Image 1: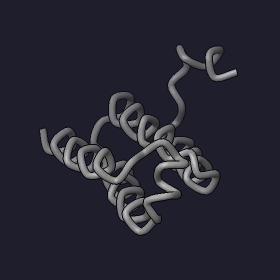
Image 2 (image 1 turned 90 degrees about the vertical axis):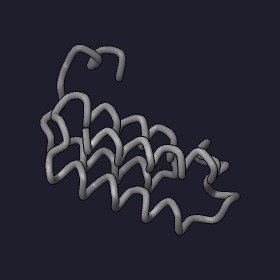
Image 3 (image 1 turned 180 degrees about the vertical axis):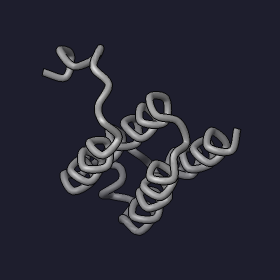
Image 4 (image 1 turned 120 degrees about the horizontal axis):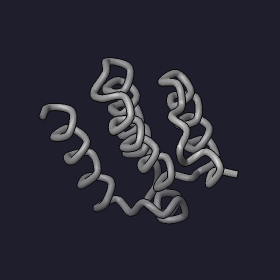
Length: 90
């Protein structure tokens, strides 16, 4: 189904809802990918920056085991946050 939507840009509000859904389901790597897709499609909006910082705050509170189950090891989490901040700044 997602393949059918690849050429479709989601409304910005939909990214936030989808991000929360993915995190709730433990799909952390997919959620991080979606965050960067949101950035690419809509730029570094205030909503995106808030959602991104919130995402990384929430993920940092997760156990290492849960992060691994969500395919986002802690070392990649730190790298992702740094890349997110750089991307929003530039």
